[in-house]
Image (cartoon, rainbow, N blue to C red; front, side, top):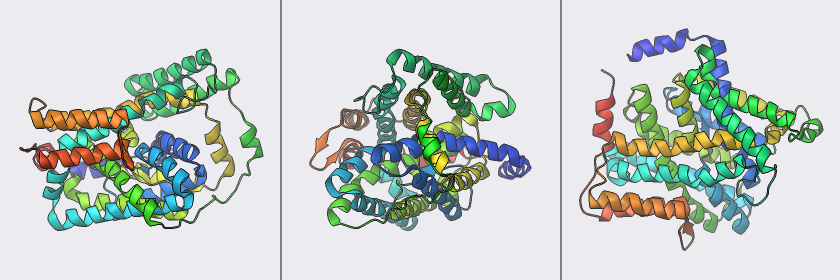
Amino acid sequence: MATSSAQEFRNEPVWRQALAGSQMLLVAFGALVLMPLITGMDPNVALFTAGAGTLIFHIVTGGQVPVFLASSFAFIAPIIAANERFGMAETLGGLVAAGILYMLLSALVKLRGTGFINRLLPPVVIGPVIMVIGLSLAPVAVHMASGRTGDGAVQLVPYNTAIVIAMISLLVTIVASVWAKGIFRLVPIMFGIVVGYVLSALAGIVDLTPIHEAAWLAMPAFVTPSFGWSAMLFMIPVAIAPAIEHIGDVLAISNVTGKNFIKKPGLHRTLLGDGLATSTAALLGGPPNTTYSEVTGAVMLTKSFNPRVMLWAAGIAIVLAFVGKFGAVLQTIPVPVMGGILCLLFGSIAVVGLNALIRNQVDLAQARNLIIVGVTLVFGIGGMVIGLIEGIALCSIVAIVLNLVLPGSDAAWGERIHHNEPH
């Protein structure tokens, strides 16, 4: 099966790979546009580091895993908080340290095997944390679909106009992903964004001024980090949640493609790829780069399993990073359009987490499992704060600790993945 799949990938037309790669870049808009705009980073730098990070990941993993790297939304709130406390330079230094944590996890997996992960991060831990990432972002999608900023503080577009555009964008995406045929089924999100953008232009809510003022060619505004212990200690726990999300993503991709990526190229390599990409991005002033569930959801929707598609997405991202007007275009996509699309993509994140529980047959009738999942969901979605740790970072730590201290154990990843391997 692996040989036939590889042969199928080799025979796939280049134009189809390039088009699918362009769509993956559109899928990454949530991270590539919202992340830098919300956190004060440069979107062109984010494009460059996402492309470079994806290439680094594929070099480390041998180009076997069909993923595109960009920034997990789990980092948004911590980056904003760290920027307020320590400044952007030290925040970037903290993100470099977060990438190093990935590398340390990679080394532990290499030395002790996946059994270490099975014990520390079983499905009962990973599932609810990924669900928290998706569900905690649901208000952001709803606010944007309603014409407000992500935090709901400012009404950017009249509600009646925004909700119509958002719902049409969402409907077009759903229709294209379910009923479109051939090549058109590969670009449902592109359809949704294009239709939504056209409707927004007709409604007069697209501001083209940034595009006119931007230069065609421009160097991304790279930023050099500085390092402070306070910022690094603040940011390191935050990396636990995206690390858990990463494992869930790799498992989800393994289940969808019928290949065991935990075994080959190995979880230690995928974690190392994420770590190197994250630290490299932070060294250049970009947001952290990890495998993230928005793209996983898109891969599941479009069935784009060819890793070369992601290389095309990476190359296009790097080229576009030097096109000043393209960065300006990204900023002109109205919030209702993005909000409509994100209603589907953020939901896909939660479903990935739920799928981890279902596929691995986590018994929620057991008291320990019920406690771990229940407390994790409430702490994460409710935004619980204990000391300097809050939200997703806190619920990740709580889930891990509860799993280690409560008596009993849950199903491990290894067995489940083994049953899903192709014969």
